[in-house]
Structure formats: structure tokens, C-alpha cells
Amino acid sequence: MHKTQGLKIKRYPASTNRSLQAWSAADEHILLQLKDFDTTKSNVITYGDSFGYLTAQVDAKNHYVVVDSASQQGAISKNIAENKVKWSYSFLTPLAKPALKPTIGLMKIPKSLDLFELFLDHFTQHASVKGQMICSFMTRHFSKQMVEISERYFDDVSQSKAIKKSRLLILKTPKKRQKRDVISTYSHENDTIRQYFGVFSSNSLDHASQLLIQNLPELKNEMSVLDLGCGNGIIGKVVLQKSPKSTVHFVDDSYLALESAKLNVEGDNALFHHLHTLDSFAPDSFDVVLTNPPFHIEHEIDISLPIRLFKESHRILKPGGELRVVANHHLNYKTHLDKVFNSVEVVAENEKYIVYSCVK
Image 1 (cartoon, helix red, strand yellow):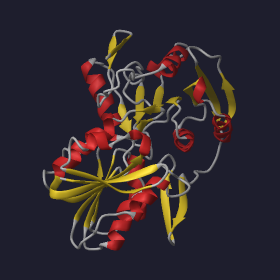
Image 2 (tube, rainbow, N blue to C red; image 1 turned 30 degrees about the horizontal axis):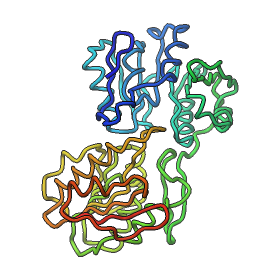
Image 3 (cartoon, rainbow, N blue to C red; image 1 turned 90 degrees about the horizontal axis):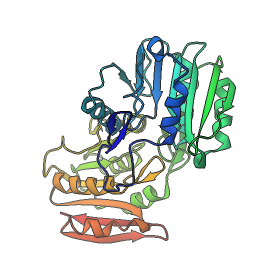
Image 4 (tube, rainbow, N blue to C red; image 1 turned 90 degrees about the vertical axis):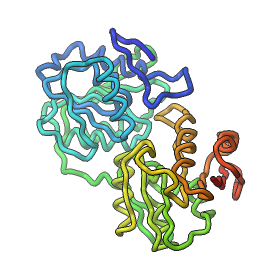
């Protein structure tokens, strides 16, 4: 828990890593720059506010908060409620149109520069012709691509001086442009896989998921399978190809990921859920859970998330059901999995990744 300007902003879900806080100097830098603006007379749109630090402190005539993840929306809502913030705001998905044209855009630049581009595309498509953006980043995360991408969307791109090892990109005069396709594609075994910018592994099937696909458990007919952290849906898609009478539930915290999965998978036995917990699923309801779980939140490593998902997977698996998980060797998940499952075995590995079979 941290205090800022009389507020207490927390991380949700809570992390076991006490060194991680709910904002950074890059967020503070945005607020410092905003002192030159009267936001109460402006339509503001905010991108990349993970836990509500910006939302809680920006009082705007109309404030649109773009959220991709279910956990992000939950965290912002909780922090706003707990701090009894009085001004209003509206959540938008990254693909939704704001009711009124924003004049000010705020963004903590995400780790994914594809997602950065999607956000810039969103702003320039919907903002006022005089709209401008204030984008922040920690100097250690700077890339020349940030400037190159910005110049595709704005005529006036400048950088601020560094404050507390953070900098700003100030973007003015949005370029007139036709709406571009913010979907990337790649080929996998004669299939074309499509996904929105910002979804993990945009140019090819990542090596970890590939190893998991090569080492799926035995798939019998009419199984109930959960593709947890489904991304673009490639793992569940392969399951349905191998076992077409099974039902696969696709779950992801990311709205863009889930919408990407919908681009790739069709059929009545493919069900989609935008969730960051498995609380809505009944105990003992799945035969198999498959996952390549995330362990990063932007630039931060936090394994408390996959550990929580392992415990939740155990609850929803039928007796004798299996969690099959692929992970980086260095994360040492077996120590945590052994505490939850009756049996944990290594079924495949290479120099970088390992696949565990965990039986309830």
C-alpha cells in the first residue's frame, strides 16, 4: 500500500513481491505535466493506467479510461472506491469509440510497442483535430521505435527532460489518415493465425506454446478443456482439431487476446471468457487445463499470478484431472506445483522451457 497526494493506491491482485508498487515516476511525470492544463474543461482519455493512479487524480469534463485487462478494470474500480474519488469516468475497451472526441490523451507507454501503436491509432481515430497526447516512460525502457511509431501518427513529436529517470513524449497535431488494420497475421501448419496488436507473440507461434502443443495430454472425445491465458487461441484451436467433440473454454485477462481468439476459433463448442480469476467456474468441472501462464506485468516479473492460477486450476479440475503447463526453466514452478497437486511430472523440456503434467 502506498500513499500519494492523500490517496492510497494498491496493487490488485496483491503481489507477494513487496518491492512492486502501484505506479512509477513515469505516472508522476504525467501529472506534473498536466498542471498546465485545466482538465475539468476537457475530454480526457487515458491509456495504460494499470491500477488507477491516474484515473484517481485526473478530474476531467469527460474522462475515458481505456482498459484491456479485466484485472486492470477491477483494480481501478477498487482503488477509486476505496479512496472515495468523487469525479466520474467511463471505461472503454481498446476497440470501442468514445462518445465525445477527446482533446487530451494520457498514456504510460506499454512494454509492447505494438500495443503502443494500437493506442495511438485509437486516439488519432477518435480525438479532436487539435488533440494532443502526453506519453510517459522510464528512461531505461526508451526505444527509438517509440519516436518512429509516434511520427506515423503525429506531425509534432517532442521529448521532455528527464525527471526521476522518467521522460515524456509530447505528441501534437494528429495526422489525417484512414483507419488502419491493427491486426497482425502469421502462418501455423497451413492455418493463418490473426491477432490484434499488443497480444503476445505477434509474428510467430512462441517457442513455449509450440512445445506445449507438441506435448498435449491424451485427448479423448467430449472432454471439457480450459485454455487458460489463451492469447490468440492457438492452443485451444489445436485441441479442437484433435478432439472436435470436446468443449474448450478460452480464458484470458486481456480483452484484445480474447477478441483475437475469436478471430481464429469458431464453433458452438468454443466458449470465451474475459476473466482474471477462475471463480466463476464450478469445482471439479474440467478434465484438462492447459496454460502457458504470464509472469510479467509490463516490465515487472511477478510469479504470484501463475501461482494463484495453479491453485485455482486445482479447484476446478475433476478428481484425476490434469493441469499441463509450460514454463521457463528458471521460474522453478515445480516447487509451487508440488504443494498443490498430488502428482507433478516433467513430460518434456528443452534448453529454455519445461512442460509439467500435474494431476489432481
